Length: 173
Image (cartoon, rainbow, N blue to C red; front, side, top):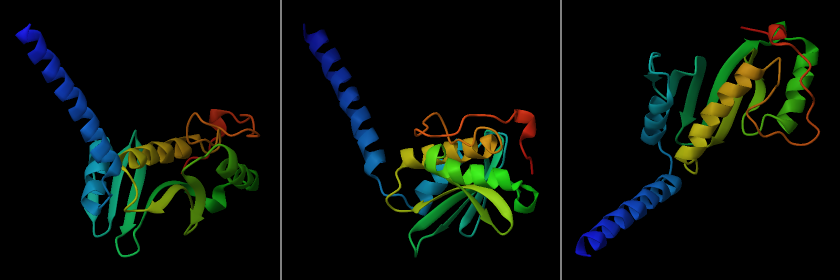
């Protein structure tokens, strides 16, 4: 009986420890070190992670992503270049704007410095590790589906357009 009590006690302690760790990660405020650690953990193993000043570059599932942050403004952004804006048909720009409303949920399609990006922009400190991991995945999916599904993942709000383009129609930078 004593062995069962010890076994149950050990299992319960482990069970509550898992929840304590998950709660700590969910409530831990994002800072630059945690941001860099999380990105480095998610980056492709065969790719390199580069950190310079307030920016990181890395690949996630073969997709280049850049993270830029400003601690003083408490802001961060993930961006992934898709194509030069001048090479994108006007119809695709309209589809991207529609997708920003219906099917690209946390990231957005945006044009900056003449480049179409999938971008996630957020206050830095309230961002959780789970939200950052989700944002990285969604930015990658939005990049890969530009020109086809225009999506950041499985969830789509009602009214989203149906997929009509073929994968071969995708614009590649």
